[in-house]
Image (cartoon, rainbow, N blue to C red; front, side, top):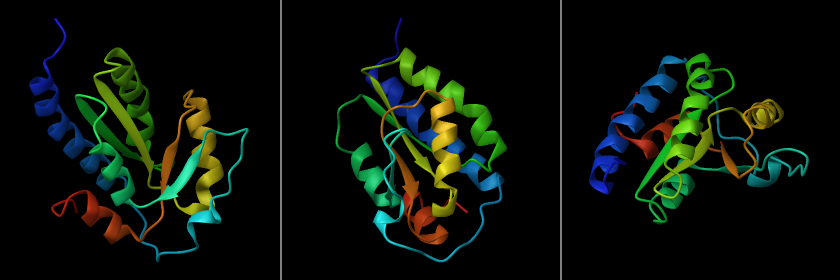
Length: 147
């Protein structure tokens, strides 16, 4: 029996916290905000990777369109993030139409080509986001208790 919308919502909060904890465990590098949103050039041979802030992705997560939305914050330099990625995709696919998966890379702009290559290796063809703000602003926008 498929999970109810209420059950999916109850699942979403712990999943988001686990994702935040996993990324925090990866030892994110601190950097100053750099460049402009256009600094991540479009490449039609690669999955779309749009420079954006956490607020952009969270606004998209709140715009409806699914019973539950999972925001997966990942990075190419984060081993646990790469390891869990296929399971995230499988979960979203298994619950297509009810669960939406939004992908936000915490890689730096100079790592965009590596991020795109990883997305391509995972079969991602839709738009994903690349963090375009300093680390603390990014973290605080997701959740004030994320360290």
